[in-house]
Image (cartoon, rainbow, N blue to C red):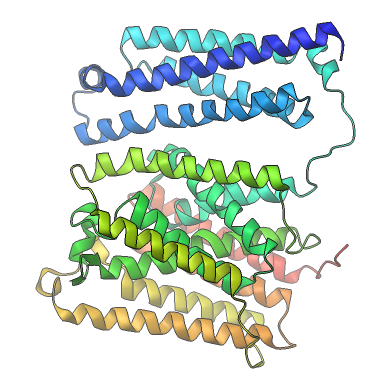
Length: 469
């Protein structure tokens, strides 16, 4: 590398550090002077919901801060001459410029903060120019791509996890779809990281499901505090609380995260890349970076959601330690215990199997999910609520038992896996359409998504089974 190229890299690194400094300053100032920012926004939107404005205040600068923190890792790799880091700088500079330009043009912040945004825009514009100069490109010549050949699978999983877990159920309305940016690092990074460590230890789908339970305990118990909060999401009104635990909410979400936040996104991606099979998608450095992103994402959600949605509640220390211990124990079992093959049983043909998993998903949601935010007042705290919870648990246990026996048989095929996932996903979205959709736009979106999912599943069943490389 000649002196001109080294100087070009130093310039890019300097601009990255400057952009990082300004981004951190903007996020900190926004939160420190949040009352002034809220007053400015109230003046611009006098009819807006104050709680909604406060949630937006917490969530808008945080994704920018998270992206900026990634600069530290990119800078180290860029100085080492990694071509992958150079590509990431080109992408991040363009995406960052667009995001800051959007915030600047919406004028949602006081003039003195918009001045700081102007500095951000100028630095990012200079960065775009500096990183795309010929001398910079010559320092990282195009050559054999040394990144994992399955990087596309890794990125697809990062994208699929939050879309399946949140958007396709309708829990995030389309008008606030940008909130996915807040959840994406935790969902996407978490799903990819957990998939990697489970597959590296030789784990199968049962191990993925167990790891999904551990993930659910961390997200709901430690990050959102929703498993014990007496106020958040009205979860305490769903069923009797036992030992301070929101029982029905815990049952619903631990099963949901195990199936729809982790296992189904992993299965979908592995079906899209059948030649790669269950081998890892990432090298060691990528695995470490993904774990860091997942932890940072959890911290972002912890700082953004509970203070806005459940102000004043702090989970007792004993519950924190208990959830951490249980999550760790479940994760250890998921990584170290490999269930013996079940007694094989002939599986139903793909289409009846899709109907079976779809019916099971609808039945589970119908039994465990409280329509309208809480059960009817007459039954809110009565022990009757334990009956549908027991029935929902029986549905899960019976389906897992049957799926283990069906998948152990010689008749089980890739088409069966496609059908099982398609049925569960379509039912999942149909339930969101019936019980979660907020307005005609969201109902139309979820209806179209359910039809599209079914159509893609049918098309996948008609394609010949690919031969592994």
